Length: 88
Image 1 (cartoon, rainbow, N blue to C red):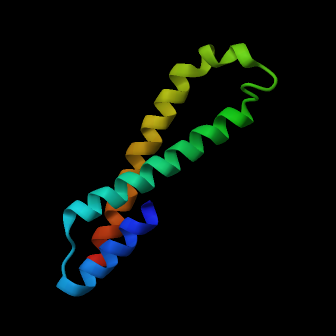
Image 2: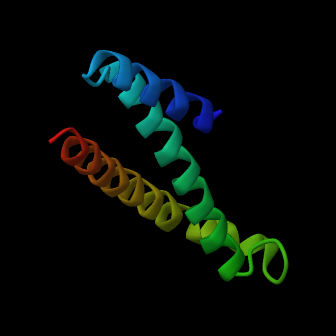
């Protein structure tokens, strides 16, 4: 899905010579959601959640949410900077 929006974004940007912000928003949203989901799964697996300590997820839930939100915000800022730099 994300690749299709990237392809459409590149074709439209190439045809018009300017970035269309709706495609930019969708691309950033898909990319950040995928990366955040992957990071949260990596943290959960490294904590042993579901394998060794299935009941300990409740004690880590707030920390996981805070880390996920912090990563989401920092990844959005990074991708916005990358797209702004791409236009220059």
